[in-house]
Length: 219
Image (cartoon, rainbow, N blue to C red; front, side, top):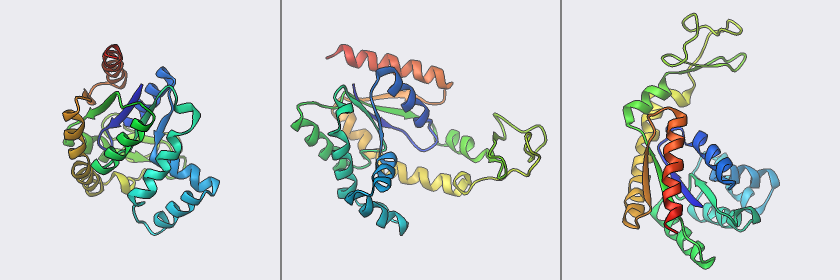
């Protein structure tokens, strides 16, 4: 199975990616992991990527594409792979398609985990963490016994910058702007499948397995 995972920040992609990867025994490939691995390994591309990241800039398309290209040549991708966070743009999607064509394979499914915006904002802005022991809570789904106080160590809970409403909204806007064209692109190719990400984690996974099973039958 060759799968692309799409979905806004906070849609629970990471959890589902892990489960899909385990069930189908295919590597989960995220651009973040590739960057970290290359930076840690001190590769030429890793050093180049780090120079941008250190300045707080986005790593340019061509560097990201080269890193993904190299990753897709590794042996563990022969049975397939799950791409998370790539492609982010139509250009990247086209490059990926050409790259796979050279290997006489294609993407089976572009799987979109769909979650309404307000739902994500509520899910992310409600997170609280303990700066002392690292315990995490949610105001609505998993509140501490005492408001604003960690159950484990009694420290005052904080809201991370990433979970503040304006940060969340900004990330969602960037996602919509970048990814909306991809959704159209994969719909046109008949590859897009959508799953409702507001359900319980295990239910979302069951829906995903059903979709992937159907995609597999068509081969």
